[in-house]
Image (tube, rainbow, N blue to C red; front, side):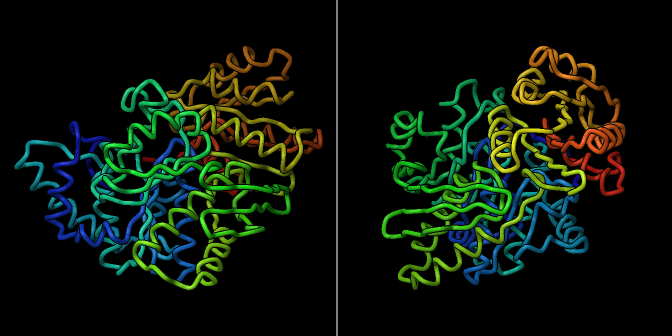
Length: 438
């Protein structure tokens, strides 16, 4: 979309402030209407659930997420409708003109994600959004979302990712993500952050930020997951909601749903206090039940049953695998595995391979590690597995579908976003090489 590198020069905050001001983005209003979602895993699911709740409440709701899966327009939505091509092109020209002016004056290069964030802010303003949910790109301290100054933010989970930028310990990574929150705000931490509680309480103390932790201050109980659906009980303060249904599968979605609910409740209490509790509960129930987000334990085909997952960190992959087995059972699966060249294939494949006896190793067109390298990682993790090589995703689709039908098996595609989405595209008759990732 933008003729810019993925990342800009150094820290972007000052030039981003110039960009928003020159685009006449009302930053005071942006702050009032917005919440921010950060974290290692679960950001997209949490953001879409929170946005769905806002829309169910009757608010015109903006949603900014990344990455996209099939179309760039997925990243910017208002009331579940992606920005159309004409609006995108029109706003792109406006943003590009200001980016060029600021770059010339400051002698700095913008990143494409920075320009896209500014475009989203402008689109939400022109669309008259009452509520907006922004997903951070990387971290929080220097990510463009920090310019929002949101007072309600979250860290959905923490895992080792982008360590060259965020730090080589979970404490450093969680601290960076926490800095998306404005001083005096509230940060909701997912349950896998609880081991860092002492650090995070002290880290936030002198900025006056209030930390809330899922399964400590926020109660999640009586979780049930099955192929027919899942539900849980939620309690926070005087809010006590029983049998909350989820539209998104996976045990990790209980954490994400609780965070999305709290984000909305806290924002609503600040912006629109003293509203009818029945209306609030109805919106939350509807939003969680109706939320949809592709690629997360998504069934893309029934015969043979084929499930894809876009998780790409070891912890996220382990959680998805556990939920796959809890929902569908752990027998009669074929694994289609791959990993991106810039990821640790041994760790990713090591989290998957021990649970499968038949594994097809392949390489995505986009940044995919060589199939032979994936096979070597499989042999390290599970020497007894029956290993098949598929040089391309198209080959992997053909082979997995044939094996599934002759052996009466089901198919699980995991190891990275590019692999999962390319596989789904080919199954549906498309061409993997036609996808355009950013």
